[in-house]
Each structure stands twice: as structure tokens, then as C-alpha cells.
Length: 412
Ligand SMILES: Cc1ncc(COP(=O)(O)O)c(C=O)c1O
Picture (cartoon, rainbow, N blue to C red):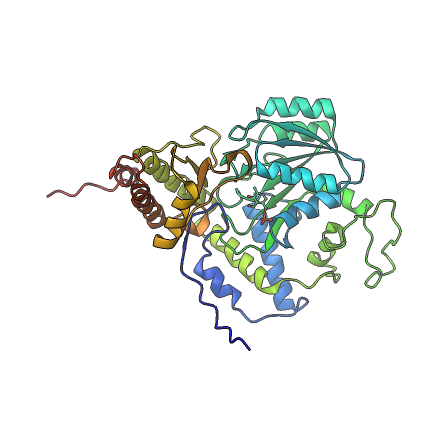
């Protein structure tokens, strides 16, 4: 019989656009002893987490709670609870994750209409609004921060216009929540999905979501409670029940609400993790946290430019937590990533689809978004590029980053 040894994970510097390094406080919280899912000590933590999530989402919505599963579980829970077969859904696609929204909506039986723009661009908000007017969908499903391209779609005009037109907005803020403003109420967004393993610096395995009364009303028309837990007040026959049991928001909210109606067994340790993660976000303060993400983004960009490399997303719509670097001609991007990992223990990412092999993506998210990480990745990248005979400005990148951090030159 093989004797498997205890886990010995190497210590890494994770500078991808997720998953990123987890705050040690979150890891500690995860080792808290398990509680039963109806234990008042646990349900109190659930309520506290909901309360903190509302603040992170900048909303007064009653409903803000996590779905158990990776970020796409949040997308799937919202879309499959809202979309009935045949419903018209409009998806503007500007990278990989717009395709994911499309894929999920199609599997829900939606009549999906697409808008596409080249990867690296985002949409003019008026163009999206015009398309919403023309298509008249029930739902506009759109990504806020595209991790595949490092671009961020403005939503401040799209949300209010959709509200006026009676179109529901479902927004993937998986990459952006906790790293840049996601103003659910101000932008009048109906349902928003965040991610844990990105700017919240919690492991992958939960998806915080929020939705408003309009969405709740819709859910209640499709609510069908599982027979084994249903009570007299629960209807068992509905016209078009939500197709998924696991992702049925109408039942999930009955567990997260005062009724505490049993659904699946809550992922206790992940809830401890999320509670600590959002507690840390609020302790730092939203504004301070967003400014920290901007600061390290500026230093990283300065370092990359200083080295003589070209940025792919040097655009006004750049997402602050993802910096994309064009892989210099004749350089094997995968070999560079491999040397970074093997020699320095640093992980950066490649990209997908049309950008595969074209760019590296460097994340500055949550706990990974620190000065020492930025300086380490820049110095290691320079060393590795020299080893690959790339033509770079040796020594300039680090100095530019130190300048961006305002580090004084010492007098001799
Ligand atoms: C913008 C965006 N949406 C959705 C997802 C899917 O998340 P998960 O892999 O956690 O299901 C990701 C993951 O990278 C993402 O970056």
C-alpha cells in the first residue's frame, strides 16, 4: 500500500488574476471547529456575513449571500433562477467570460442575442443601450471585469437605462468585487455576482451574490419547495419551476432568511473564510482598498514599461487588478512562465482564445496586491527575460516601479 505523505504545498507568490494568495487570517478562520448549519452560533455568522456583503456590494438589497460552488455557481444560480426557456437574453461579449454567460444562458433555454467587440475593447454604453432597445430582452447579462483581457466595462449608464426599459441586469463582478467600486445600487443593477478567489482573497469555493426585490418577485413566481421539506404554505405545483434544485435561489433564500428552511448542507469552513475575508475588506475600508489596488497597478505598469515591454491593456478602461503584457516577438511565453515558477516560485497567467500565446496576465488582487510582490515579480521577470535573450531595458523596470512607489534615492 502506498503511504501518502502529509500535504506539503510549496510556498508561491501568486500573481495571476485568480486564484490569488489567501490572507493568513482567512486560513486561520478556516481551521475553526465545525458548527451545525442551524446552530444559532452559526446562523449568527451567516447573518453577519450577509450584512458585510451588503456593504461590499454597496447595496441595501435584502438579499446578499454566497452560493456554495466556484464563481460560476453564482452566475448559474442567478441565470437559471431568472431565465425561463424561451426568454430573450442579450449578452455583450468582450472576452472569455461573456462566452461563459452565453453558455449558461443557452443551457437555461434562453433565446440568446449577442453583441461582440474585439478582445481588448469594451462597449460604448450607448451602443449597448441601443441594442437593449432593439432586442427588448428580459435580461441583459454582462461582465464587469474581463479577466481574460484585463478590461472593465463601465455600467453606470447601462444600469439605469435598463431599469427604465424594464430589462433586468445580471452582472459578473467576479474579478472586480473588493478591488474596485461595484456600485450595485447607484448603477441600478438587479443581480450581481462576485468571486471569492480574486480581490476578496478567500479560496475558491463560494460565490457571493446580491439581488433586489424585482428579482425576488420573479423567483417567487417560480418557487417550488422540495417535497421532503415543504410545509402547508408551500406550493408544489408552479407553471415553470426553476429547473435546478441546487441553484434554486427561491429555496436558498429560505435557508438564508429567518425561515431557515433546510436546503443543502452549508459549506461551514468556506463560510468562516468568506466572513473573515469580507471583515478584512471592511476593516481596510473600501476606498482605501480600491486605492491600494490602483497604487500597485501603477507601480507594476511603470515597471513593465520601464523594462521596455508593451502593455496590452494600456487603455482608459483597464481593470486595475489585471495587467496584460504583450509577449515580445520570438519569446516563448510558456517557457518564461515556467522559469518564473520553477526558479522563483512565482505564478503569472497566460490567456485564452485569440489572446492565447499573445499576452501574459499579471494579477494584483487582494492579499497578493502588495509592494513586495510587485517588486519581486518585476525583478524575476527581468531576470527570466534576460535568460531568454529578450531585448529589454535592463535595470530600468525596477527603478521605474520604485519611483512609482515614491522611494527616495539615498544620498551617498
Ligand atoms: C470574470 C470571471 N467570471 C467568471 C469566472 C468563473 O469563475 P470560477 O472559475 O470560479 O467558476 C472567472 C474565473 O476566472 C472570471 O474571471
